Image (tube, rainbow, N blue to C red; front, side, top):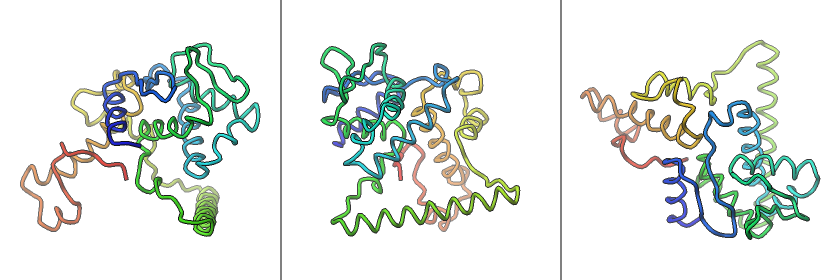
Length: 237
């Protein structure tokens, strides 16, 4: 994705503005948490599902989406969170929004790139493309083994009655509400997902910079944490 496109997406998402970016795509919006509070679990899971699918099988994602009625319905449900259109239709493998706007095999790649940016998943790691089929198979095998190890680890922890310390969306909302100068539990749901994660990342930057601010930072601390002023651009890794 071009830097100009990415900057435009980030600015619109940060300010809560609708996104009109062309490519025959419909106008895209970031839903406010308060508007999807009853469906937040569905929203997060569907977005993660299709972002994971895109990152694993970018070239085949459209075939996967239209492979079954249930899969198409799930994708349409995800898309509906990002659109104000009420008459979204599946027309023989083309999801139509009317007025010449649609999502199909022609623009699905760009649409998913947009969702990646809106969900802070736009990293250099995902942009890597294997040089050949062998490299692709090796990457897939590595992912499979990693997933198997994580599954086994989770099963062992569950049997032992142990829960790992995991920072999820609930913890992020709670942390921002406890620390932010103006956001709290009564108004944080007025933000969208992008804005919440952005503010959380900014608070982390401030925490890292605080020792410098009060004069307690050592050279080792600055070097080890690569400390820059908290107003610097946040890069998703």
